[in-house]
Amino acid sequence: AQTVTQSQPEMSVQEAETVTLSCTYDTSENNYYLFWYKQPPSRQMILVIRQEAYKQQNATENRFSVNFQKAAKSFSLKISDSQLGDTAMYFCAFYGSYDKVIFGPGTSLSVIP
Amino acid sequence: EAGVAQSPRYKIIEKRQSVAFWCNPISGHATLYWYQQILGQGPKLLIQFQNNGVVDDSQLPKDRFSAERLKGVDSTLKIQPAKLEDSAVYLCASSANRGTTDTQYFGPGTRLTVL
Image 1: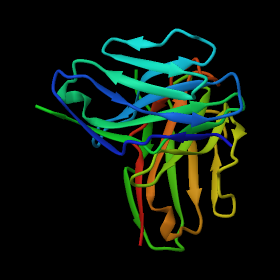
Image 2: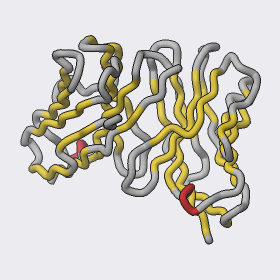
Image 3: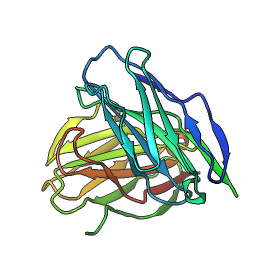
């Protein structure tokens, strides 16, 4: 069965600095998708970035980028130039070829002014 | 474009009572998801619909949970009877189509407290 692990329950970063959130997963599938979602306090979950497993190039979205290591089954999120609005829970999610959607336990990120 | 709507936003019930949650996805979205998010955990997929058909309900506790999407638009999730461990936020999400090329848009959730 697929699993998603986020080993950092809580993290903090100074405003304007860079932070990296870790995610590892386990699967026997070759074709799948990985996501990072952001859930601000008392607000709705939104998609931050997605990565297709068949693509070697790491996805980027403005200040957000990923480091996808397929062989190591690792999918970390880097946030550059951290802003106060980045304070949120961040969830790593796996979407497999059999419509299996699995979220990790989340990392609570605090951006400190 | 209106987002995913859910109601009620909050619900408090006694154990063994019944409760129902409603979700209206973004107009035109074929795929609808119900998740359970227990405090301190990531969302767990309960059921996924493609139009009015079930794609995956492998993690839905079918002895007490049921869900329907009769006309392929809005959906209802029911718990009958509720247990203490059902206390959670129930999230609804929708996407234009099945598959991962389409973003899932989440609703605000319904926070259920079972006493």
